[in-house]
Image (cartoon, rainbow, N blue to C red):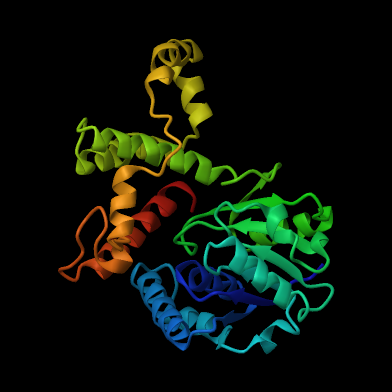
Length: 310
C-alpha cells in the first residue's frame, strides 16, 4: 500500500510538527484546520523549527525551502477526498473525535488509512464511528514530533494487519522508531509510564518532600539521563534483580496510588495556567521567555539525538 498524499487534521503543536517531518521526507502534506488562526500559527512554528535546524547545521537553507514546498494548508474538508492517509490531531475529547471520524470517513476514499494521534483514548471506541473500521489505527507521536523518535502503533480489534504493517513501515521510512502496542489499553504504553511518574513526582512536591525544581533535577540529572540510553528493564538487569526485588518489597507499598487527578495539577487547570502556551504553569513564563524555553528544549534534544542516535 503506497502512501503519497497525507492530510494532518489539526494544526496544533503536534500537527504542524509531524507535518514538517513528513515533508522532510518528500511526502505531499496538507495541514487541515477549521481555524485560520491555527493555520497561520502552524506556518510560523514550522518556519521557526526549520530555522533552528538550519542554525544547528542539521539541514541547509535550500533543504529548508524544499521542506516548505511539500507543505500546503487549508480550512476546506475537500482535502480529504484524494489523500492516502489522514493523521488526526484534534482536541483530546472522545465525542469530538468520533464526530470528526464519522464525518470524514464518508469523504475519504475506501483505501484511505485513518490514523489517530490520541494520547490514550481507546482505539476501539474511536473506530466505532469509522466507516470501514478495519482501516483505522492508532499512530501516537511524541512532542516535539520533529525531534522525538518514538511512535506507538496501536491496533484496534478490527484493524487489518496490512494497515498496521503499512504504518510501521511508514514510520521507519521517516526515520522514526515504531513500537507495536499489542493491546488497546487506555494510555497505551508511554503515557501510562509517564503519568505514573508524574503522579509520584507531584505527590512528593505536594507533601513537601522536595521542591518542584528539585524533582525536575532528579529526572534531568539522574533518571532521565540514564533513561536516554537504557530502558527500565535494562536498568534493573544492570542494577541486579535481587536488589530491585528487595527495594520493591518495602517501597511499592509506600508509593502514591491515588486514582484522583493530582491536587496541584487541578489547581493550575482551574486557574487556566496551562503551562508555556498560557505563559504560566508550574513555572512562570510571563517575562516573555516562553519561546526561549521551547528553543532551549529543542536544542538540547538535538544534542541528545546527535550523541546517541546519529
